[in-house]
Image 1 (cartoon, rainbow, N blue to C red):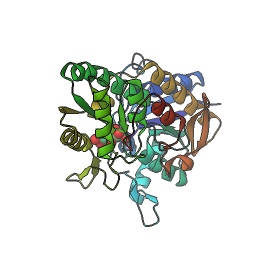
Image 2: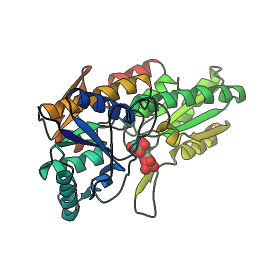
Image 3: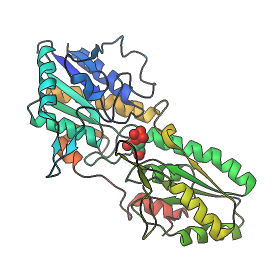
Length: 359
Ligand code: F6P
């Protein structure tokens, strides 16, 4: 096989493990005698003339443990997949033409897109427009259909567990109720796993609507049993039964979730008379070094992406199933979110160790 040049980009919200993917892909490409170039700032780097850097061994040495992405990323930009009439992803034709120009002028053989739901939707459309594309699933939310795991999730969960450990000591000293709001968008994976790992007493997730009264009862029950604190983890997308998600619209028209911890804190405080404090963990969950698991998963995903290109499996995405890196069509991953099933084994396990879901 001749010397091929492959492009790679990181798109959407960053997450720990992205650099491990870049490093893994770079080394696997090198083994095949190929060259890997990284486009800067997500798909924006594909705009002519193509803002890129060479990702050879020296450029990717010593980056695996770094959070974020050395290539930069954007959530918005010229390629943002707009949702058209039929729920279709639509990138403006002139932007696609520009990407095609870059692709040709740089003599690319294929492009690897590392992204979440939205970015993989963009990747899918590029593929449908004739670009040889391979996807790598990325998100701390772990909410992508067609893969059992995304890298970044474990690091976010570790951050939640660490926050709970810290909040627990202060909550116990003051005999308080502590409410910790975590990320995850419309899926409760981070709250569920982080809450379980950090010894939470109550976990509130979008998939199980909660009742304030039930949470208050749990706090009082614990109080009667002599517990010195109650730790509540609430996912940013969780909502009360008959209530709605807390979201606000930004100046650019974007909807952002957030604010539910404050409401849970207030309602529980009023019902129990206990002192309550709230904490919003925010982007701490996305920053910092990846866990060992995410470094390994990222490396495996990067290597697999190169193998998919070698095998000419364009339009496919790396997928993690039963401890193996496999592949699935990108289309299987982007049209539906993978959410927590209220009766799944993890929820059952959590209930078995006395965790309440406020329902
Ligand atoms: O999808 C990842 C995520 O971190 C969500 O959990 C969160 O709601 C969102 O991105 C935050 O996005 P931004 O960085 O644009 O504020």
